[in-house]
Structures are given as C-alpha cells and as structure tokens.
Length: 160
Image (cartoon, rainbow, N blue to C red; front, side, top):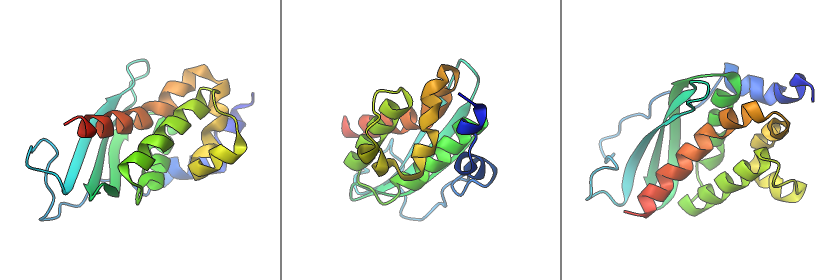
C-alpha cells in the first residue's frame, strides 16, 4: 500500500482548506444540548480525542427538527483526522440524525475493511477517498475519530 493512495487530492484539499473548521455562528435561537428543555433547535458539542496519537477535535452540530442544519469543528492532529472530520461535516449537513448515524456506521465499517460493496459506499460521497486507510491500521483511529465522536454525540442525544 503506497502512502499516496491515502494522501490523495481529496484528503489533502480538506486538510489544507477545510470548509467546516470554525466555531458555529452563535444564533439567538441556539439552545445548548445540556439544557433539558432543548428539543427543537439545539447545538451539540462534543470533544473527541485519539489517545494513541494526540489528535483531538471539538465537534459542534446544530440540529433542528431532527435535521443537522450545520456542523463545524476545531482541533488539531494529522492530515487524516482533520480531513476526515471536514469531509464528515460536509456529508452530514442536511441529513436526519438517523441518516447521519447510518453513514457513520458505514464509514467505520469501510475503514475497518468490513464493508467493501462499492454501491453501498457511494453513500459516503468524498469520504470514500479514505477507503485505503483500511490497509494502514495505525491510521484507522485517526480516520474514525470524528465519526465516533458524532455517533456518540447523536446516541447520547437519542438516549435523553
């Protein structure tokens, strides 16, 4: 497995020019997820850390009527973790919480090499560019950091 298969144009573009690496704009109608009265329009915030390499992100998503209206992140780490987070944010905006969870599960299976069906993987759009990470176990945790963080965040929301 050549490294250039992982560090492709899509990954490098998202790493060098992330569209979603910023804080969400504070709108007057935002409600913080820890507010138990919050149900219709909320901002969820969760920190994700990869203890094996030190990559970390703070993921923010705005959910209204069960649809992810916006997503943003801040953090530091390798190109794989930062690009994967930016790609994930782009993919889940406009999706329902359930659709985002399904995409998260599919992505994790892909980078673990458990899902290889090209037709199913089309749902991941640009995230498919990280498919070859499955051949480099040391990078899998970097690629899945944001996706695990999102999954945990959304499942915690559902269990409230």
